[in-house]
Image (tube, rainbow, N blue to C red):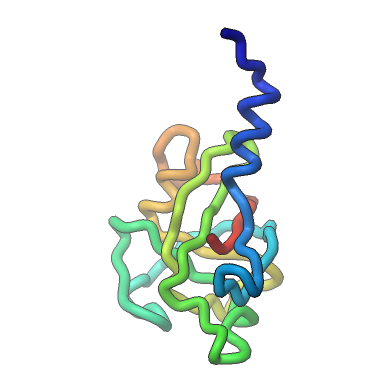
Length: 131
């Protein structure tokens, strides 16, 4: 049986989706694209302290307003657009220096998205969404 690359790609797109407001409790629907930088001190995170060996994210402060829609502990999918590699990260912090839809990931997240497993080779731009 032959399965085309296009079929596999279409299935991948269907399985990676943004959360749906009103149907699954999603307060922040949509797909976002932003610059990726390192989350330097996850132990001082806004929501919960983290570490560099787990995959945690810090996202823009705009997602924390209004406070009752706080994304603390929410899972997000982060995708490297050049390799199509996707990881799941848990939001633990508010990035007060992140403009637009830029995010920060711990060392483990940077390594997981990197094509060679090295944090300094992680993509500079990523696509991400709440799941």
